[in-house]
Amino acid sequence: MKARRHAPVYKFGHRVPRDIKEALYLDRINGNHMWADAIMRSKEIGEMDGHESFKSMGKGAPIPEGFTMIRVHFVFDVKHDG
Image (cartoon, rainbow, N blue to C red; front, side):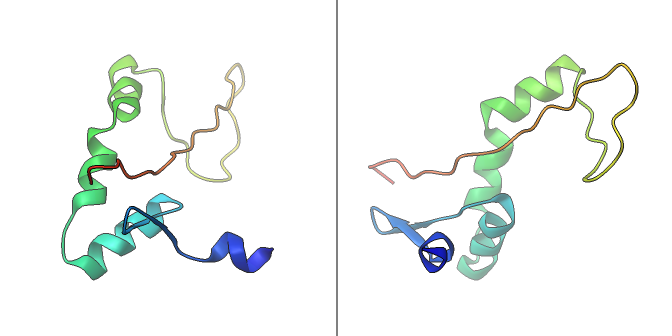
């Protein structure tokens, strides 16, 4: 079961990353920046930046008093038309 979770995922002939680190790795080996562009164009990134209520404290940083930690994750997928 563990090997299946870490095996590359392909959809419609394209490799789909599991996280941002893998997306940037795929860009590097493919010689393009398609996943990086998709991440920056994503609606969620724009909304988080626009509200000025989200500030990344870094991984493992203590939560300031009076604030709530919100976990954020991305779901990568490929459209059927590429």
